[in-house]
Length: 185
Image (spheres, rainbow, N blue to C red):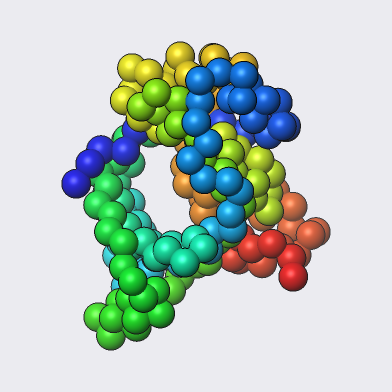
């Protein structure tokens, strides 16, 4: 189990952040790939109501099962317990979770590119509601990396992509957006 500490900063232009990463000692860890995330919960929503997340993520040929504890905030930095493991068969993992009485409550997608700046992970996320930069690592390093990338750490937004999507949909009812945060097909 680890403690995840991150900033999630909305941006207008991932290209400028990418340019700054290329002109530093940052290393590209993963070129842009589509991620498909499924959140599971009990029939009565016990996990979500407690602020917990149980996610099955598929990216390329990898499948990751992640449990996240309730989030807390220290300034703009979100922190929460995280346990993650890779599984060889995502379909079987989803079936096991279903047999345990869990159901898929939401699906969300993003195109993610991952960089490493020293020991800090920087992800460039393109989502159906806009672009974000997530900066994850030791709390004392997050603000400095954000500034190095030309970002204001105090513009970080609280919440998950799911909660941000719900807010986005609520603010734009005329668009008739789906409950799941997915790219148009």
